[in-house]
Image: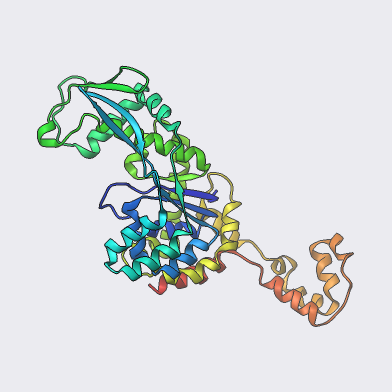
Length: 379
């Protein structure tokens, strides 16, 4: 658990990228991959100085991929449509970053510095050519199409006029690529309802299915996409939801907040630069999280580990002086008899050092109540 997570933000223009969630997940997951589009680049520009972002992107647990291709519906005329993907043929990530940074800052020098420093750390995600075949196959799945239709209407067109009986929304394929839509939904004029809106929802969900399958990780999708995809990938979404609820309960129990760092960063109360020192110290904590059993209760496991006796507590504090003065071989014998045969018995400063290190046996609360808590208190 908590091994890797893929975050696909809402692609809707004007919906801010939840970078607070990205950075908070970096404290818990071994690796975090984020898919962004041009709309999210502006949030990346505003997030922090290029030097801070560069350190974040050099960090082994974070990868950002820019989506150059997106699903689309084309119109052939006479009410006939087809599905495809769009993207720039000669894509240049540095030019894309520069254009958006210039739009946000209005400063050519800042935009140039940002794009040069960040471009080499951002990869490019392209949907494969075969995705079009997958899109057509999913459009032929009547159950999946029904879910996409209902969720699209609920999310984007709550006021559209519904027929008294069944909501008819069917796709007639004229060939492998071309199709027509047959529907009895009304209200297009005042609701801006396009008859291909559910198709767009479904082919976007198909693209998310591809990303999920290729990443082999937990996936964090916008709520709308999650509802559409639940028809196909219940188990993956359930695991992701379980992890999100785990983290929420953990923050609430430890700090009386549900999303501590996430909210602080998104509301600009905490600067990204401030999290870097704590992130550098999070490796051992994340290793412990990675080894937790499937479907664990994070608070229970954390409390169990915190209350677990240390090596010295298992030996007994009364015996400490005896062990200290009789040497390293004796204390090693108490812990692991076989290992003691490999140790040269010697009494001195080295023994005292080893005993001191054992006394400092690591527990997850050393990170949570230390660097992590200090970070929250410094907001």
